[in-house]
Amino acid sequence: MKKTARTIIDYMEEYGSMDLDALAFNEVDSLILCQLSYLKYDSHLHALSEKKHGTPLHVLAGSDGIDTLFEDKRYEKNNRALFFAAAESKRFGGMKLNNYVSVLDESWEVQFCALTYLFPNGLQYVAYRGTDETLVGWKEDFNMALFSPVPAQEMALKYLNRYAAGVHGNFFLGGHSKGGNLAVYAASHCNDSVRERIELVYNHDGPGFPPGTVMETEGFQKVCKRIRKYMPHSSIVGMLMESHEPYRIVECKRFGILQHDPYNWIVDGTAFRRVSNIYEHVAVRNESVNRWIADMSDEERHVFVNTLYNVMTASGAKTLIDIMSDFKSNSKAMTAAIDAEDEKTREMLHDILTLLFNCLQETMQLKVAERIQPGWKKLKEEIEKWS
Image 1 (cartoon, rainbow, N blue to C red):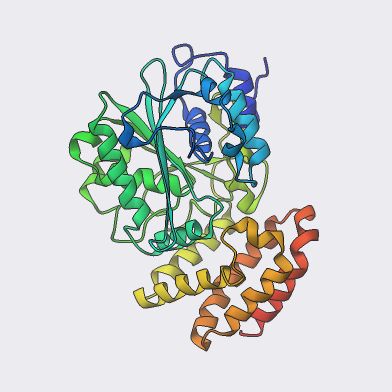
Image 2 (image 1 turned 120 degrees about the vertical axis):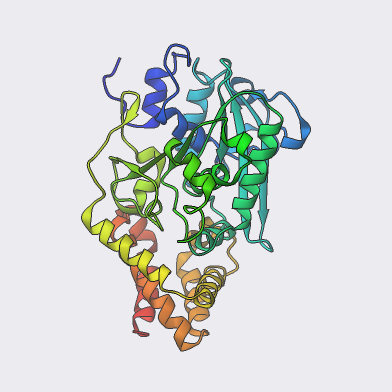
């Protein structure tokens, strides 16, 4: 047996033969459940309203049409490996998946998904999906950094109260990225009788909340000591509006935005490998972004988010995959959409897009760079004309 598991997939190979009675539930298990929540279960799982008993993971793995689970091409290879390793394991194979809810609505500007896991020993876990590949999901992320509540947060709260009312005993909840934010929001605002039953809230690199919203609530104060937040040492998403939760820093295999990918988090045994602090240059950058957001008026925030979304969808794209599939052509449409905005709006976009370009340049892999760098370079040159 290996002494060190480098990734969550390695962890599955090493500890999958041990059920929860042999090895207690831990932070790595939580991240695995959160990553599995990204799979597209729409035609496979029962809804919260159906009051069914759930489907064991090993049964789901043998069902027809299983390829539909892996439609998010960003993580298809790793998601397949993790899913089947978990399904074939003693640790996760008998776990039942149930109460699946998935909502995607452009008019509401909402992308929300949640499901529950029930282990044979009775452990229950409510998982909220993070941001998927849809652009409306990313717009809701922008909204989340600027306003509270957003529709997904309200849905997360309703889901938790409704789920808890139909089951007995305590439970865990958590999520990765936006899912971590939803878990904290729901735990902070749920009924007191529900909050008392929460064992822990796992927030895996989820963004924080705008000042004066969640952190000041009585509910948050009651649950904050049960929140476990984990962020990579070059965190971008998790540091967004971060000001309230003690967090644990995880070492990763990659740098920059690629550290947000759970498959790049390094695992030592049954825990994440820790580092002492967020990189200094990352902390300075995120502090600047948070200060920039805090200094914006509500009107400026609305203008910025709406304009950025209009730019991203100018080519007709619905997902990030659509944009990247023909970035050279899509960047032209995005540039034209920016040019059509007024001077003040263009200046606002210039500031944030310059930051995004810097992040991309830090993290872009050579293979990806060769494919899309020309489009990015041209778009950046156009934006630089505004400054």
